[in-house]
Image (cartoon, rainbow, N blue to C red; front, side, top):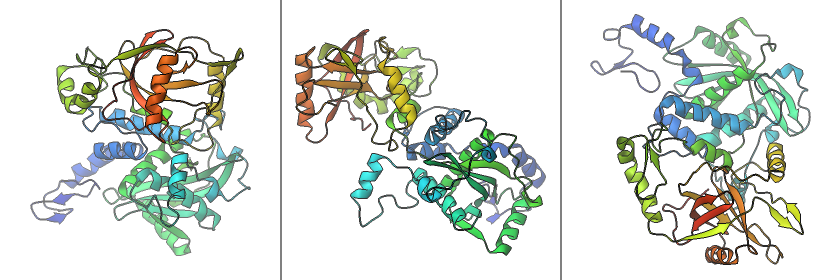
Amino acid sequence: MRDRYGIHQCTTHSTVDCQECFNWPEIIVEVSKSKDWEGKVHSRKDLLGLLKSMGVELPANTKLVDDLLDQKLGNALTAAQKLSPLVPDPSHIDPSKLPLWKTTPAFQAMSRTSPNEAMKRFNSPNSDPFPLYTNTWMDARQTTMHVARNFENGVAVMALKDDYEAIAIRVLSIHKLNENTPLIALIYYSSDLATPAVNSFEWMGAQMQTGRLAQIKCTSQEQALLRKLLFQNSRRVSTEFKPKMAGYERRFKPSFLVPLNPLDQLEIGKLSHNTGCQVCGGKTTSRCAQCQSASYCSRTCQSDDWKQHKALCKSLKGGSWASTDFTKHVIVNGKKMYISVFSASGTVPPSAQTAAQAAAERDDDSPPPNVHGDRPFIVKVSNPFPAGNPTQGLLVYDRQRTFKAYVMQEDRPQVYGAAMQLIIARNNRMKVYRWAKRTGDFKLDVCLDRIPDPEPTW
């Protein structure tokens, strides 16, 4: 059998790479045909685990096919790099056309954090709240920082490795995308013990002779994540970028690293959301008859999901609903006001792209799109207005931010008062989660007396 590392283990003779039991010519052909492993994570368990480490937690029983899970992981990595507002064409990057990084140490500039992470560090002055090898996404973010540090300390060649796999890297230079964002231009090659490449061993030997080879320990899962990241970015490198390579680097690929941002709740919501069947993402044909909030493609998927869906379904059943009007904008003295809302899990400060989107939203008076139809959906209800402010209201939005609105105190004092009593009862947690239904372009029903079970944490 072939294990997760690609090592061929013979159970009959209890040995590795048995010459008697394995048909090695066939195995070599099979391995050569499956070399697309570099750009994909083929283990379903690893795919779900890597997405979870980034904050994208999908149901354990999801029937989404591996290719769709791999696509979600790729989309998550793209979102984490936030390239769109930094370069005119993120699919055509030529590092040689960018100025060199000459400001702060690149090691520091590669760091990105969120309010939640900053608070955890503040509350743990004598310990590391993010120890190595407990969260793959955090490990990968720290590895990219250390790649920059090694290069700034005069070490350009590195091996990201464990006992079975390695990613060979040679950093070429560090460039400036903007004042706060470096880009590390590099070449890389991936190999494992099952598919050794002569040129990678030549490369390793040549670098070890110079005494300037840094080795960074990475778990198998972290290497899978970094391989996918480097492969995706290699596709974004312009064909005009042609760095000089030694003969033993002939199979290396140009790529790059930029700071990796923690995903905010808007990004996590989009990646966690299925527009189709609750289980497999396929075309839906029915809904849960009790709550109407979950859709399925078949009885099989609905039956498979019942254990997961049961608590949520029962939390909605029998609730009473309060009807309210809402507005997309806060109006004060006849003027539109915009309230900036950012995620505690997203990068500090919010990106320029977010600010541009906010300005566009402020000028749009059309009704919010109704992606939920007549189905109930979960909303977060909070009060973003400072105490004592003459204007008071509730901010209401769903996880995907497809719906965001305000319920103003002067328009619906009873709904506002009931919701504020719930919020105040939560002590320091100035928010509650409730079920809601769209009943018109600017009308919403909210189930105030039922708490979703389990209660969300976004």
